[in-house]
Length: 116
Image 1 (tube, rainbow, N blue to C red):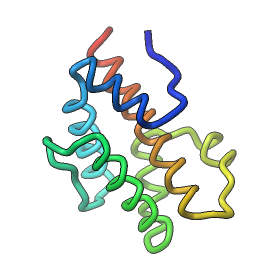
Image 2 (cartoon, rainbow, N blue to C red):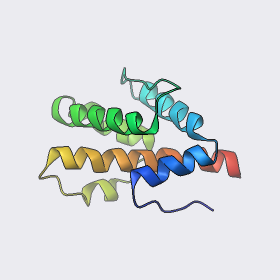
Image 3 (cartoon, one colour):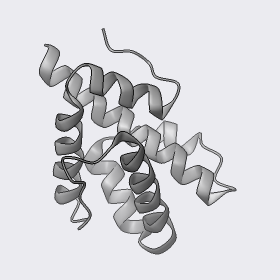
Image 4 (cartoon, rainbow, N blue to C red):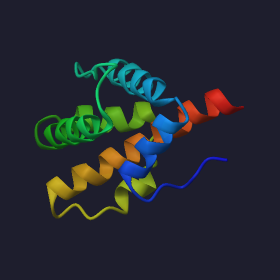
């Protein structure tokens, strides 16, 4: 059954334990490419490094390329209601929360493709 993760680390541990971490990376790369964002993650990236890099990319998109950021969220099908519910007063914290929502959504896609 798909778990409702409370923290990004918990999600990444489960993806690794389920042997689906590489597929999660592939899904992220696929959706970034579909959104015309020229960032990608190497297959061998550690979960900790993935968390840092994704956070940095989201922060940069919010600050410098807001239209691309919105397009990425649309392509990934991240819940608009969940994004709107976040506190946007601190962009660093906001980008961390959005990175978590992105990983949760990408994890759902990977999990369902491999479990159903």
